[in-house]
Image 1 (cartoon, helix red, strand yellow):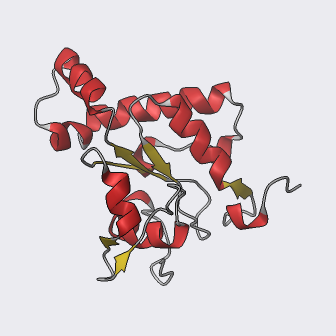
Image 2 (cartoon, one colour):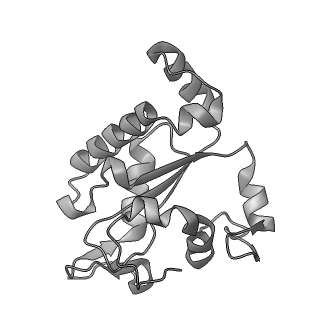
Length: 172
């Protein structure tokens, strides 16, 4: 039964409906390190993946890295396997707490995390050059995500977060 706006949902390859905004909110609220969470609408796989942006919370991330012996600068720490594990654990805890259905849980290998400087939202509103070579506005003036443009921006990481996606399926 559908109890959300139709535009904000998609169907997985197994026929399960994914309420995208609800899933993003659960994961963003459950992880103190995630400043922005984006769930791409991929219909040819049976699971959900997430693209996470770390920005304003980088101070917390670096404190965690120092305590846990993770070397490197901001970008290296955010892209480390140990940090990905931490984020996956927090996502799982949030999914359990909010009683998300099992197919909505994001696995560690299906998470992409990147570090962006503070104030990246203004850049995303003005426009960023995406992998397709076009300058795209990724957020509206009220900082709401533009899904099609975000798909273009995160397109280069899709093969990594969707390893079993059919090769003949081109998204975006």
